[in-house]
Length: 374
Image (cartoon, rainbow, N blue to C red; front, side, top):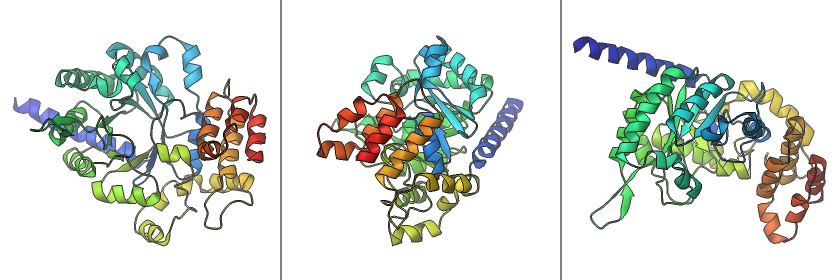
């Protein structure tokens, strides 16, 4: 019994050390592009990397479809030498296909992530994401799955979870920090190297408050790196959530989707943010790797609409994305059109009918023409 305990302690020490060795490669408190379905294409990831985003996740990849062959694989996954570090996120409900897909994808990326946090209706219907772990019995089975993943996949295995809930005496849904923390510990013990925690629970929308206190408790309890996720829309938000939680990184989704330049070193929102940045490591992330490349890209796309404070114009942002999309073409304009709709969402609302120019576009050049006319 004593020998078993010593062996387990040695395993955990080695696992934790390796987890931090892996994460420290990416700098202090890196900004991470969150996994978002149908928008985290290669061109978008590369654009985010140009603007101080250090780690990128792919969009959610369906493990059941991945193992069926190259047609789906080629549609949802494209990468290149500059697209690193890259974490591929899998979603699925069948443990065997999750394991097979993870083993297959491992050599193509830096880590494989399993989605345990998605609460969309499609996830509920498919029994994946949060609905893979929404009962104690399911969580026990997922822990067994991670034990297999961590010993069979050739790269580190990571996970993304959200805060669990319980019902109080008045039958209200409230956060359940105990279950959240216990599950985080179990994931670590099963071999998870990095854990992203979304600070909202299932029935709260994207604008709801984030329970940073629970993320902080997870950070203080586990020994592996924890990424804080939720409610970050600016550099100052990122710095604040790092201070409040002590997390090893920050994960951002919707804010980057709307503006992939918000974490650029040249973009300072206000003087208080400038002071905050000087007192953190956030402005050093990605500096040595991407400074030269980022400056080159800015020279290509900057126009007279760029603000003197470093804020990039909408035209600059859209053109930069489209140039990257042209350099790394997809078989269709599916992703490019998605991003144009998102970038120009506000302008489209103000001028109904404008969206038809995006819908009718046949080439990247058509979309560039749309951008230049806006």
